[in-house]
Length: 623
Image (cartoon, rainbow, N blue to C red):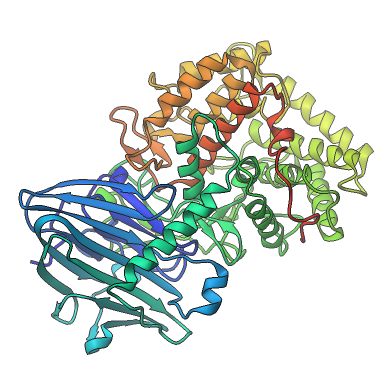
């Protein structure tokens, strides 16, 4: 009776709720199948997403056949699921409550809470709740203690979960269960909270629940209203911005790549990775997106986190870090979980932690340059960091590395890595010219920049393919080559870039607007952000603005009904693949929309003119 009761939903069947510290995935059927507390990369309490039998879940849904629809409350991350049966209708509202700092100072609130509120809006409807916690990635059932009027408690290590319910629940010691009927206007509330060190706060249920929902909706809507983007893709851009905000770990300013681990890039296979960390390669695009939308505070917080996180190893950098700026944990497999749709292994940690990716140096310098457009001068600590990064690039730019896509087959000399090394030199010289940065060894950096350009132009161009190639002297293509014009290395309408675009479309295109990221198409789905890179290439002069708009509109169809995008898409059926929702894809969507808007305004260089109509709240970024 307490089994999961449904086949595993598709990846795109999930919505996500969060509070800028962690996130939960909610299926379209009203089941929470993924939750890690107290932060994104903590062990799970619900992981039916990766094993419907052992992982644990918390479902609230009608007992009889019904129609399921859903939507976020406008401009918020508060999710509503609508149940329509022959006897009545009900609305389930799911959220992690959020509030202003001023409100939190004046009121005692749980450190972490997930609130569920269901109300019958018409007729009557019978509802079933199943609460099946399975802590530590489904390592075993939880011991549930009945505390009477205080609720039900589950102790896991140093932390405790507390479930409070407005309806009576039965327990067998490992699960909670109830079936109840709601009639027009009647409602039920459920609150799951978590505490590790602070005293546990007992959240009130009943009439006050709606006030919590309203306060959270208002908080998200106020944040969304601060966006300066008012273009034709306003809804898609705002949803992407809200997704990125939800992926932000507010205590540090870090943004994780995704809130999930081991959702497969190929169903039934082993391309399953843990993405609950922050990748430096996303840095410049993330900061550009935030600046372009007018979110200078978020951009400053993220850049400050980047400079802090890399401090321990500077001038050498890792490619990914935890939300606290620590090196990501070693990768290991969880043998107990069967994996999403039998896609094994399930991994936690990430083996790419030890890779060398030279592009991240350019990404961090480019991110700093983006922010540098809006301040008078960097502080002395940031001066030292940026020049140190420049010196590292000057010494190592011609090295072998793993490259942007993190293959585990050995190091090569990647074109994109050299492009970003060139970008690092170019931006540091530009910052020096502007006076935002001082002490730049101009002669050395200019010489290195020119050497990198010469190598790219002479050793990565294939006369046979009439295209730039993924590696020096190679014969394979890579969608990241579409970024060459964006960084200002070459114009989008140059003969070489037109040839590169044609070759990429021919070899990496799927025929429906999507792009694979490299030439091993059979290994995975089409990569989400690459399609948006193609849009930007067209907008920058590689095609017409109308072509760019048409392609952008085509790509929007691959988001789910909530406007959320995965890492990849199966081009054969349009289904989502990989971790979800994927910040990298949403960053690409925002960037493409901004570039289209800039080109329509006649601006020529998105990398240097983004966010020109917004003001910064600070004149310095602290390293």
